[in-house]
Length: 426
Image (cartoon, rainbow, N blue to C red; front, top):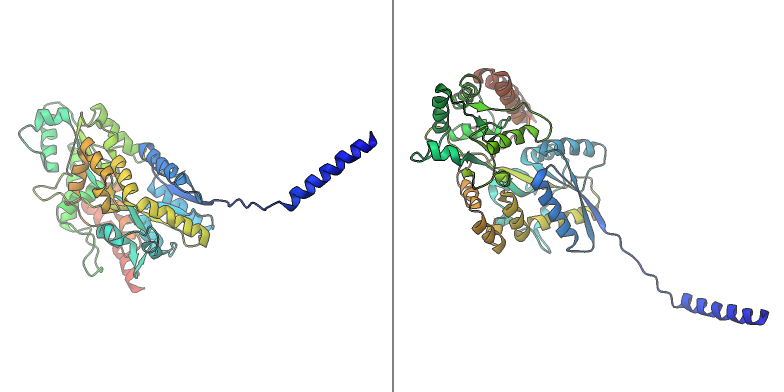
């Protein structure tokens, strides 16, 4: 028995030795992780997750992990803290004013390298009005994944009753009807997103400017600004035909306005092209942005940019660049704008079959594209965002506290001019 056991053990030893001699080392390469911060919720947040899923399944070397933030502002504030504590993500999606502020703080990496090599971003396909604001000293610090512009949404029952023979073009056209109905005891409201965008867009239609061409004088207390803002104050607080909600965290107050329009508590509102999926196109019409008086509609376009923080290491930087190139490709950009309604960061998206199919299914996309021909370019703020901060504060005081346009804008001008003077001394 002992001899038999010995022979078995001897044979097992030979087999094991043979296996060890023939062993080849197998190296399992770990995927480079790209953390992606974005401030989109609801359907838009879901669409981003779809893009992440598709990218992760399209290759084997990189895995993108998405992290939703409350909104663009929340993303910016979180990113500033992360940069200060060396805990930043690989890529973040920011509103253009946030991007510009981080450029001024020297917190971002230049992305010029993404315009050459494999699957390079074709710079000629990126609209100048979106990209220019992200370039400083010939360095590109962000690529616009998309841009947003605001348009008009009106309930069809309101249009059919009051606007059958009168095309609606201006704020005055709408407010005249609401004031007349109010005087008859028929209270109707237009919804207002509680922020500065609506007021600014109306000012642009009125011919107002933020700053002079020499970047030396802030112009936000110009009569063209005061006229528009004061009229909004009257419509809100005296005529009571514009309804707003107190500013809350995230997007809550924004969606309260949209819910009022959906339910019939408001006859319409001005908001982003991306709100198309919130509204039933068979109940709520989409039109070009309302103008001021008989002037042309001219809302400001705001680019939403992809950035890489400055201290990211090389491997992560390269992987982050691949993710940005993927999002900026014409086909992926087309999928995104077809679902979201946003304007493409890559104009070649308009030529794809994906976009052409989407237009046949939803003609509102053509309205959004047409609005791009009736817009104002974003202005350059040499102060790194302080002029805009003064405007935001002024809008909040006018809307929420019923303070006159002349007072809030003159005080905002003083703050903004001081910041501009200091910036120009550097």
